Image 1 (tube, one colour):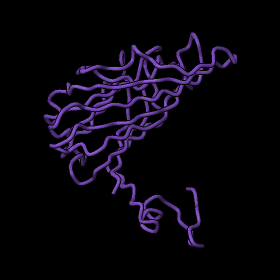
Image 2 (cartoon, rainbow, N blue to C red; image 1 turned 120 degrees about the vertical axis):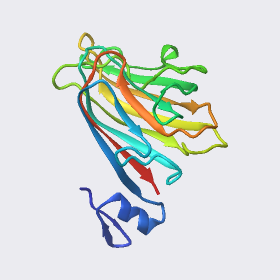
Image 3 (tube, helix red, strand yellow; image 1 turned 135 degrees about the vertical axis):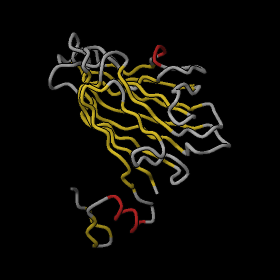
Image 4 (cartoon, rainbow, N blue to C red; image 1 turned 180 degrees about the horizontal axis):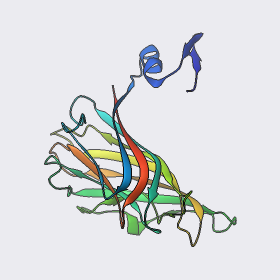
Length: 208
């Protein structure tokens, strides 16, 4: 664990750092671990998950997400009915930075095919991922004030992952948007666009 000093005080974690600086703390809520899983879902009030007005910001971290299928994309959607349906209307934006292992095709570009315009579909959080044994995805998704019944629900996500086997590369996508509903969002689901989530951990934190 990283140790930092603030006013000559050693601080070893985010919660302690937040309490000293007044910036708030990052409170661990729940970890889900994939094992050939079709989906990983966080539902408020289920199995210790908190996704309500306890916090105004929630952070999901992705650690070593590995697809079973080469070329699959990592995606998410949200629910406003306790996880019965993951079909909340979203408008989003998406761009990518990319650099191949052979030093070819470096780029940064908007991905018009990966955004949504008033759609209930799952939002892509990655390009086509590789499924070699050492290929994976790591990153995070932030959702702001999901329990609000006044405002739409904004989110921001970014990660780094290995592009699919035919064109191995470092890919860093940036996705953002809003869930266009004033109903409370009370569940979040993650899945691959095809095949299972072979392995990986997703952790949920609340920002106090």
